[in-house]
Image 1: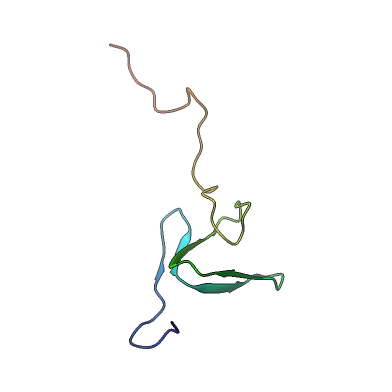
Image 2: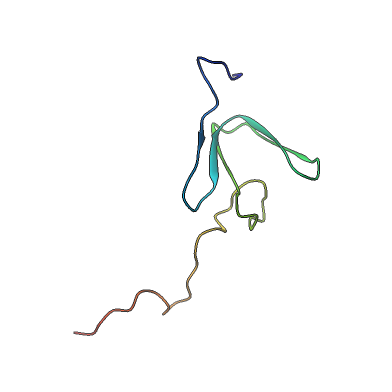
Length: 75
């Protein structure tokens, strides 16, 4: 469905995550390559850590090693 004034493309910005775009979409990357998705919502990588760039693979999430989480007091 093409975008119209009655049905504009909706883009959702998150604080630390991907850009969510209502699909289907066609993305032209800086190198000129084109990525296409027919999904109803796509997550576009904003951190460039994704191995599936331009699609988000959640690489932006902060990762912790076991035992590095919040400290809990005993007792």
